[in-house]
Image (cartoon, rainbow, N blue to C red):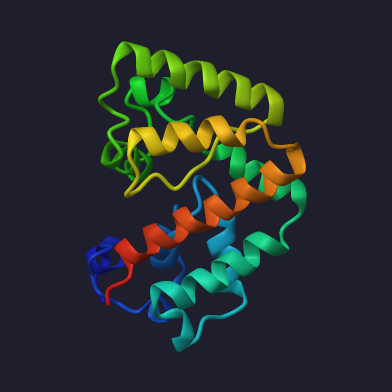
Length: 180
């Protein structure tokens, strides 16, 4: 295998056959800025069951769920605000930028941007982490509706919901990375 195959996410190699460097290069960002999840899954060994998006997702989610609450909070805090300052400054990861753009969050009116900014500030001050929603396939109206409903949750319910959304985002990303 050449060095370029190691770093090429489209190489088509099965996740279980990748060496550590190639595996982390390809899957380390599935959970936003949290490669430790992929590292832990890999350290436990990957068999053929991890060669599908769903199978690898199960392995990564098991590590995420086994993590301490502080570690999971770190994953939540690694996510950017929706339509927030990082998006405006073009400083999102490629995955987050694409996901937000697919929902039209890169083309907000001034009124929509003001609404997202106010909700982001209220949500983050209330819960201590950004609002997280798997936005792929959703409209701006659906996202705002979910945002407005969830900001009223208690912290325990919202922590659980945010973690479930992180897991959903990871699955959607894996479906883009793992062929067939």
